[in-house]
Length: 248
Image (cartoon, rainbow, N blue to C red; front, side, top):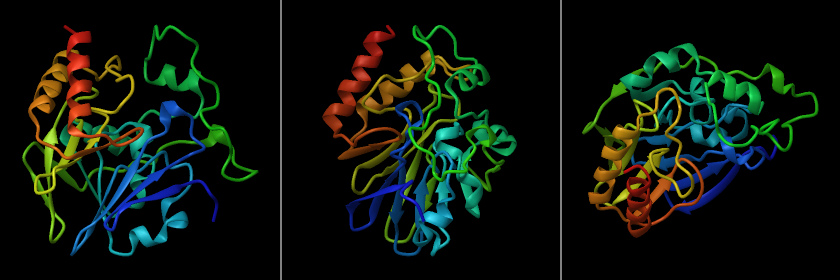
């Protein structure tokens, strides 16, 4: 085993998993939530190192993987899970394997990212998982969803349930998951405390604005995002308001 993944215990039933050797552009969170009957994992990281090898306990109860969207930093390990839930707008990309590279210039080319104002970063890792690892060989394995979800669908775990929120903008099939009983929101990339990306080929500023308007009205206790640290409802509303002002 390596030190590729970092596990942080958030509560008795929730673990945040991060990849500390991934540079900020692709450094995403995985959230492992335990239910009474079953666990759920929200997003699957880059897939540079096998999750089953490094965190075998996470697979002991055959968890459902919920993919907030199909981008490589969230779906890289998706193929390791038996059951995968995602929005239908992301299904084709997941089935094919999303565009992927661990090198900034090549990734920007594959994602058709232009005019970012600065050169893309080089290697998007600051360490290799093992001495013989070859970053040029990296790709994301196809992982077609086994369950399609849409706005308002519920995912039952036994003792707790998550409601699917379809919040497009960052991409067409972006979803978040809300535990209405506790107000815990897993936001994916629709909201995190940094510069939000709405310039990808499948992004939509009008859709993002509508999603932000919805988030402004949402009652939550804490937001666990796809990138960076967790924050509260007040910060969520500030971030949503700031986005709406910047795209008015």
